[in-house]
Length: 140
Image 1 (cartoon, rainbow, N blue to C red):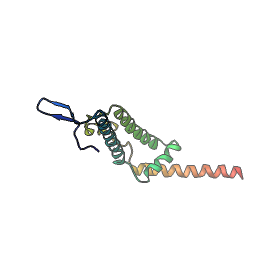
Image 2 (cartoon, rainbow, N blue to C red):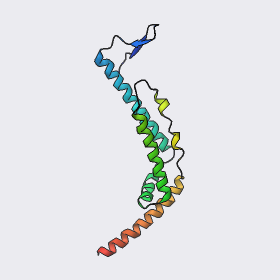
Image 3 (tube, rainbow, N blue to C red):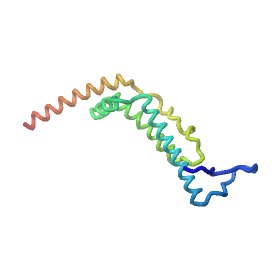
């Protein structure tokens, strides 16, 4: 966005670039915070996708709807990633190196494997279909 540095160092330590107007300086600060926010979002998304993607989240959702324990544990794991994201996002500044914020390992690995989620989700889908069939027969 900008081709001029925010700070310059003439040998006396970093100082605000005198070539920037107040508006340019503030716009550059805001831009840098925005860029760090985008990098943080990418890091959280990539951490989640490292463990689960494709159709597995759909089966996880079915499991959560039907109260399945593995799906619920995995949903809580996803929430822990995004809770970390929002905590980190609230403290982002223009100075932060986004790499320092990209560690989501406090959430650990997803508690169950994708095959386990697919099996539990398929079971939940079968149960849901039975319930819908029963409800439909009561209506007609």
